[in-house]
Length: 168
Image 1 (cartoon, rainbow, N blue to C red):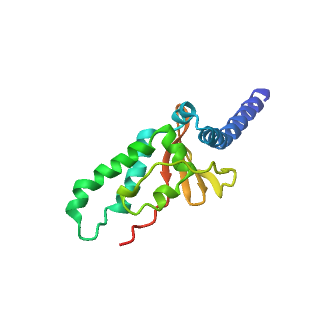
Image 2 (image 1 turned 180 degrees about the vertical axis):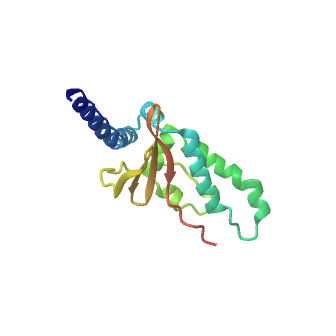
Image 3 (image 1 turned 120 degrees about the vertical axis):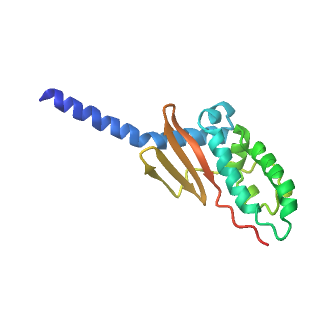
């Protein structure tokens, strides 16, 4: 009977630790972003997944060209790749999260410029919760950060900036 009690206690502790772990990981991630610690940011981001996520959003935003499809096919992907290359670095992610309006207000990919904003207080999160056993979503002012759990812990897997549709 004593052995079963210990197993139950260990299981309860494991569930509590697992339930708290994404909140702790998010706090460590945002501390790294606010201090612009490139090594700490790198260890907490799945760069290929974030790259694909941001590229998908930018292509959806700018692919609808008003009658100039050939020009888009020639220049659009190159310009979007340049934006992605600038932002999908530890410093770029820190800049993007400190100033998301840079991409939200972008009219054309050529208008892009890389700048840091003020260090926002990320303690004002709208919500943060599990969306599955291995996925966790954090939302603050329309920016959604999705973290996935892998063998190396929770990593940022997706950034949804809530980019508005391009005005034509």
